Image (tube, rainbow, N blue to C red):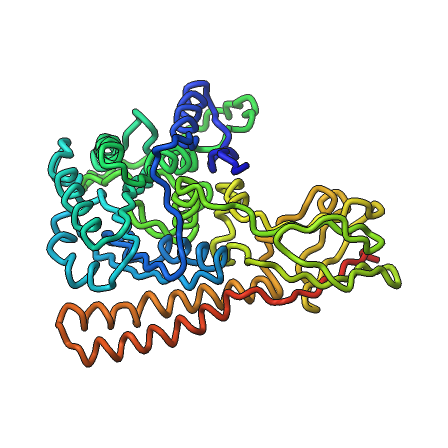
Length: 446
């Protein structure tokens, strides 16, 4: 059964009111299955165009979503294309739809807008009219539409505790988009409300420590000179409180940490398959259970447990620079259940090496509980993540942009050259996503 635990569960509420807000947001996140509810299911050779504004054009959360699908389904030959441009609203994507969306011949098109559309005022009518036209154009291709709400402004806003009109307006715009999606029977993702709670609480100051009784020092009288007149100063624009776990970037355009939480929220709403693979091996080398993987050459010699593991898919690549995203959203790792369980080791701390490189030091209890290797940020698994994310970045920046420019200019020669370069990069990327045998060595620290 797929987990429907909201991804911001690890955040601690500081007041009864905030706990209530948290529960309301949790209810918004729970996936309720209906027979007629549209769902996104990827199939072989799908081409997914991700259209949006500057937040999409950052090529962060869109790349992270791509990395998830490519590694979870390494044999489907999936393709992803970024079609984000800063400042865009629905009318802008409508104007460039033919050469910058349809020209890719997509089978899936996601539209992620709202941050700029709310500049039109409180009434989302124009935004919804534009989205409705985009749905019609996508279906005419034919392709499957996916509507994704805007992310919130990271300014400390919480539900009904708005710090800016921009963030406040995104609330009714998101509700209107959800209503449109229900009417049109279109896949809908609400990232705004879950992230509003997660990011808003991340700006709350920690509980203050108990203060020592104030001590009033004895009065000291010193002669003072007359105060100099204070020159007038320009009003200072208040800054939002600092993040306890920095998201990076700015309040509208988060950096890697914030955008991994965006990707995780979107993936959870799309009800993705969270299972990568699992294996249980006893300390003596006995293979107890395997799911979506194979274990071979398992043995215990000279106090060391060794075996080779070949998985059917790979874990979600999480960049080292975004490691703090797991602290902000601990349940993010649940989207990539890539586990190893060793249930009967003697008490102690154990060094785990993968392909001869250190991977982690864990207690016997951690290995008995099931170690999710998605959280490994060193060694062979980290190198794999770096390679995959690097190839996706290469694909979606220069190569993607060259193709789009040639398509807009209707320059067939440049378009052919750009397409060839894209295909060469994708060949490397597909190879990097293919699972390879991993040699494990587990021994107690001395």
